Length: 109
Length: 113
Image 1 (spheres, one colour):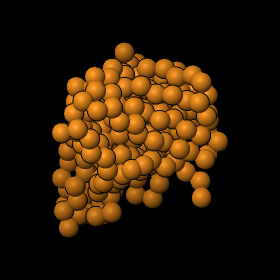
Image 2 (cartoon, chains in turn yellow, brown):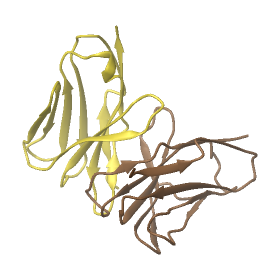
Image 3 (cartoon, one colour):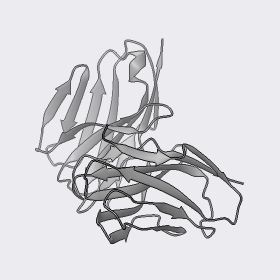
Image 4 (tube, helix red, strand yellow):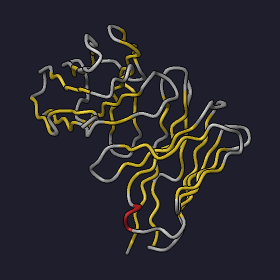
């Protein structure tokens, strides 16, 4: 079946450092989505990437979709304590999304 | 105030009992989903429904059952056949099934002892 792998599983950074999480699919994706789940909360949609090689920015967050549409990354510049949480990528299937295992980000003040 | 509601936030049950988790949405979405989340793992799909009176099994449907009698409601029953029912359960909806943004409810944390 379709699988989406995400690395790293955990990341601890000092406040102000950068952070990147990577997502890889075994198959070509029609699109990829990113979600953020704060501790004790529920996933919240961040963005969707559709085109090959697409790059989108949201303030300090940069999202990329690979040329082959099999991988994606989320990069946060100069992390803040408000960035803590688990970041999930999700690849689109025919009728649902396939979620990665998530990267749990801890920001040390 | 539109959104997805799940109740209760915390639920405790004895082993061997069936339990039903509620999920209601007022977003007029056709598709609804149930996920299970365990520590250190991602979201695993239990069941999904593309439209009223229709639903399909996800990756881990064994020991669970659902119904979709109304567009707004998609309750999940955790049966006594589910070997490890203690988990965080999340309900979600999207305008249509497939590659659309999913909106999540606040979740129900089920503990079975």
